[in-house]
Length: 628
Image 1 (cartoon, rainbow, N blue to C red):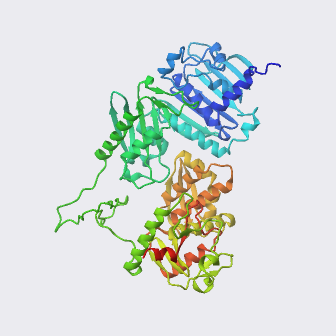
Image 2 (tube, one colour):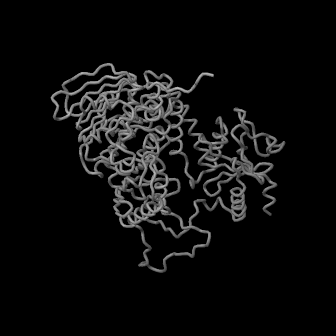
Image 3 (cartoon, rainbow, N blue to C red):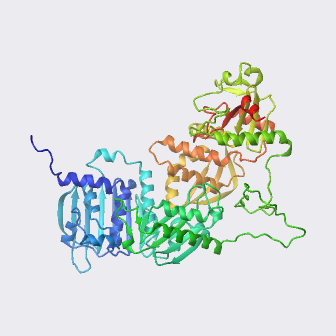
């Protein structure tokens, strides 16, 4: 038999290596900007066209390269950073493997002009798909100028997986931010299609953070600084009251390199335990300085996953440092004993927890007083005892599929409320058929609001519990989607326009979704520099914080970065619905309850919210009888 094992051609091997290093245009920027930093540049310019798919250009004023070095830089595993294996454990540079330029040249058309300070002429090299097309002397400034055109032009299968220009630009901005935050001593400029997005002069770490993410963040930052034999930690964390569900800026750096590290992230969040609501996050910018021999940056081709030799003790140092900073700089409210009479401090039960203080200041707030948001005329002792037992049992019986056993039956998306579920006389006892082929509860029955959260409706075979907030989200979501399709949303003009400031990354996403925002009823005018004037909002969202609403919608759209326009529209519609839906604790009149239920059961999918959360559940009589 003939031998079947053979060596791959260099062009094929380089394309395979490119699959690990070059994933999208932002990967090119990361690799080339890091090379510029290693070359001692004090000024770096990044220019992209069509989100980087058409052209990426990086210009620096570093030390440049000789004619020979310029040619060798595009060979695989050619590097000036290491000479022997031991050098891998004492790395102080950003790049070292010598794969980046070879991989880029294998899947794009690259042109390099470079000159050293002592040379009269520089060198021009053009490479297309690993093939050198020309090399000649040229007059050029000191430093290097890399231009990468038509990424994946020779690998169509890879190119078709690139996202839209806007999505790729979002990724470019994301990688750009990670680099500039850790190198404030270097000035950076970023241009997209000839328009300047960032102009960042040389400055301090704190000012660089503010220049990138806006002045509003400056008042939220608390400094941290600690030095131990294992690690030095510096940077900033945000105040507990500035926590948010999305949009938090979370950055970890080690020895000048951005990293992802869930373990260290948990150390930071542990320090905020009990200070911020569950599910919310805070912004942080934390810089680690450790002995290079104590970390391994060669775990992943992108060098963002880094292994530490002493992770556990560093975790403890980090968590303690953040906790100390919060206690030192945050104003923690104390109990005022200098009052008339005795302070109201009840003995806390073994299984009770102290309610957390709301982020918004309230003069009449008492953290030791348990309040109920349910109005007195909607409560009876027997009903409270009954439903407390039901909720406790329901939580205990919830299985992994999301359905509740022991008599409480969650209704999946693909099922409607059928007569068999409620008995043969549902037309008389509890349900009537709506015009959309969905059985609607009889609104003439006695119903009430429980704890300002649930709507309770009796039926023949049990009771129906409806989550009022989630029900309203489903109703508003479908209204928003219909508004974007019909462009008939009523606009409420604002007497005084409100100015909202966005970061550059947010501004990029907002420009792409302006058509959807207009269809929803927003009137936005760009004032330049990431500022927008809001002169109109959708009717029916009075009282909602416009600044928070718009930021939440933009961040939600950024999270849904697929090519499908409908996916982005759904994300925006859901975000608006969440922000403007009735809140837990809001008292509803009987007429409002009737209208909400009627609107809910006329929607296409009344059983669940657009993100899959259960809206209503049925509790049958047999389960209720077991409670007694």
